[in-house]
Length: 358
Image (cartoon, rainbow, N blue to C red):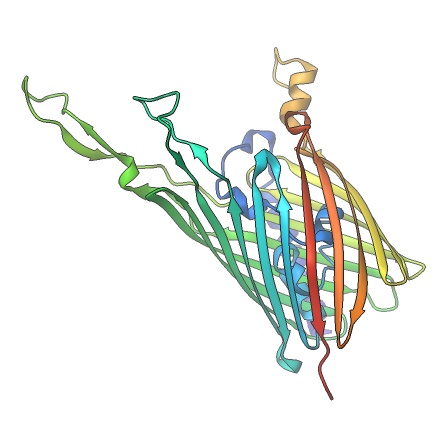
């Protein structure tokens, strides 16, 4: 009863925060560190994040850290690669270990590969033949515990790093999540608050500029000045999700997401389990009550206020390999017309679970 009341209090606070910080279309571009938004975990991608209440194991470190507690025995690991928009590749690896009644601990690392980008400067706007490659990564460590057969609670810390040549930005973020399964009902709730943390700003010698002070006498030597980059907020979000199970093998889910950096969204998804295989699909839409500005066409307004992503889908299969269970899966989601030749396509190569020996 105590944990049930705790969940109600947490859910009430989450709804209050969501109401007070409602995202709007005018919030576009007000946050940085967008690498935190790139989804990992095939099921999460296929279901557009509607699995906040049911996600389990290592994938929970992105979707809802409380789901770590659903992995309650042995060791689990995953390695995946994602072909993201604009020819960006995302490498991801993680592991989770169950520690009995103490709880479940997990950690992941995600890095972005931008390839070689031609370097341009004010003196060589068309490029000077040189290239550079930014280095972006996020390291996450989390812990979750099942306080009963119905309630899971977890939290995670993140280190966010972005480096472009010799200029970089670093930040810290916190995730908190809860999963609650109703007694005698095939209904599960999930609440996840993600990317709450410090503001970031870039600093480094690449921001140095040589110039002659405006109040200097004629013939004065130039001096080195460093541009002070403005700081930026992390893309904080709050997920409120519900999943209803039908016939023990079909889940239908909905997730409302309050964003600090864009319009709020609603995602609807379904997952079907057949033996050792699963299939899932979802779609996402924006939620908002803002009126179209005067003078803006319907097409331009739909383009500006609409969601970036379209339909998502995926499938997976579990294959026993000796004492291990290997989960092979694939998912994709389509992007809007600006990236009609690109889509997000994560592939989870290995997902091994080692049962605890008696």
